[in-house]
Image (cartoon, rainbow, N blue to C red; front, top):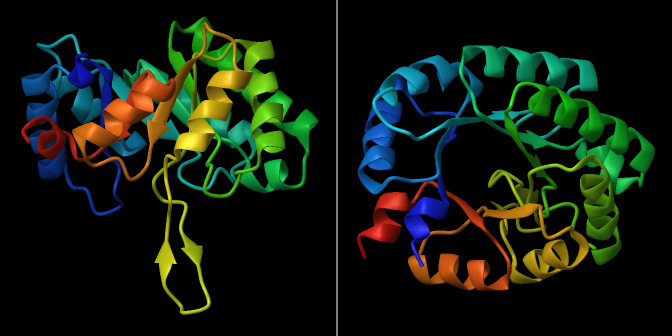
Length: 226
């Protein structure tokens, strides 16, 4: 199993600079990862840095909270594709999912999937399982993903922080049960991207064994060199 070829190497932290992206591109090229996943602002620079490789630029839309309108996400997608993104990871409208507004989410997912596929661009739909964690909700989202033939469903952004009574924030990221449900309820043709809190090769291998076919992580170097 070549984990490197399943990794979307992520450079998505709000503090990530152009120099951070340059370093990340070297990691991506060195390990021949599946894609380099960058902030929308960095698509142009990432494309130039990867020009001599076969590694596609992936970017995020509606990140990390998914609260933009469908129109705004559509314009983000158009701009990213125009600038060279070949893979799009879009966050669903989390509030709409929590209240079970499946018709709205069907419209959102169908609109963005159609746009991406018109431009031969892959789309990965982020459920944000830190918030959307029940089997029924995941099943409902997978049903929509099946209908509109998305390329991947994805667990998390890695920024789904929750505040607790002691005041601390944390996120859980990719959880094994969520991968199991995603694989159970999506068509075999749809991939599953596990993302959020994956920092070791052993953890990645376990999630792949459960059904994941992509791994989102910023810990690529550590994961592959240990």
